[in-house]
Amino acid sequence: MSKNLKSTAPPGWSLDRRDPAFIQTFMPVWGWLYEHYFRVQTSGWHHVPAYETVMFVGSHNGGLAAPDMFMMMYDWFRRFGVERPVYGLMHPSVWKGSPFFADWGVRVGAVVAHPKMAIAAMRSGASVLVYPGGAKDVFRPYALRHTVYLNENRAFVKLALREKVPIVPVISTGAHETFLVLADLYPVVKQLHEWGMPWLLDIDPVVFPVYLGLPWGVGIGPLPHLPLPVPLKTRVCEPIKFEDYGPEAARDNAYVTACYELVRDRMQRELDALVAEG
Image (cartoon, rainbow, N blue to C red):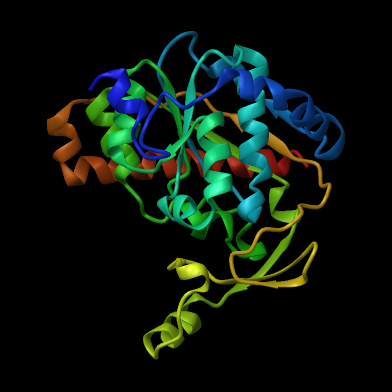
């Protein structure tokens, strides 16, 4: 596909709308948040191969604000520069529900969370950042804050096998305290929807959390919020390289499951160690 055709694609379906100058404009703001608001401590960046395409796989928390994700992106930009591309896969519902945020996101490097876009990014030589647990992960209850949750989503493993790229797990602690998710009312709301209640903003969510946080006090639903200034810790883990790669490996369900469990278990061990450090 030519560049001209890609540039006319809808937001999130093109790699060409990433804007390094736009990213550079926000670096001082992100830097202040990093140093003073969230007081981020990070480690493991030496694990990122120089000029090699990788798939970053994370488990995050913090609701729509997702401060650990943004601080991880800032770490990438300040280490490798805004010109070295990395693309983040963002859930399709964001493009439908928040055009302003979606436009801002594509200029930073967000693309629609679809295999087509992940493949296009990696084949262009860029790395990708994916959070397989999606909304259920980012809104998981406070009681599960130290549990890696990938929602049994194996699509990222199939992509890594097919495109022959290593997986680099990224983990964090602290973001779960920027607001406190008490429970997920999705089963209740789903039943109400089946009885005829329309979804908020015509979006079909996969979670419907009840949480304590700013500015609502008690928030109900996947609403935006202001994260509290809680210290964050992030870690980039050692790359995971599987024994077999290629289309046949990606079609072998038993092998894909084994690879998925390897990634999940490695991430959980790393998270347990990060939590134990205090």
